[in-house]
Length: 233
Image 1: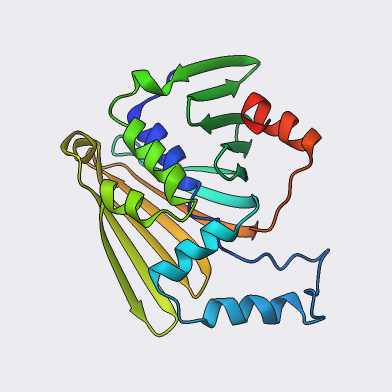
Image 2 (image 1 turned 90 degrees about the vertical axis):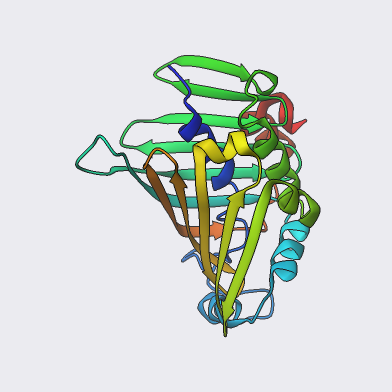
């Protein structure tokens, strides 16, 4: 197993794409007020929001579970690589990204380490040894706590809105990080984040689409231990 910069960048960034969406699952068809979840989802999608409102949603989130589909276009491959899986996020603690297809694997990231599991093997990397991406990982963990200063320290931020539709462009400030990463483009409507695209300097491109997300996920003590290990305690 081997980590590479683009993979680490993608992992660090993808925690943010699915924090805000409201899940309209078939097993939970009405909200607390008795309205159909589809109506609530449409309400959130049509809301006119600014970046500060989105960051406030980050701050209020108790936890996250989200299903995703990802396509990665590599300059050396004719066809994109496609994967599907689930993200679990415990604010201020850790992110677990589990891939179900095509090849089962998982990656956990916290403020100290990256842990990759695949095929019965495990690899742990200390973030202190990853100088090119450590500032990004740390800042993003702060960002998802609603810290605007952390976002501005790491990225040049451009937020565009047309009615309820919006696009967030992020370009790295740090020269070393900018050598790896060109830009991040996040698209959404209202409080619903729909996709994120990561463009790397080498020409590789990754796009994630959120299928469903529960930004109100509360993990039990047993779930925190099982999913996040010592980072969840």
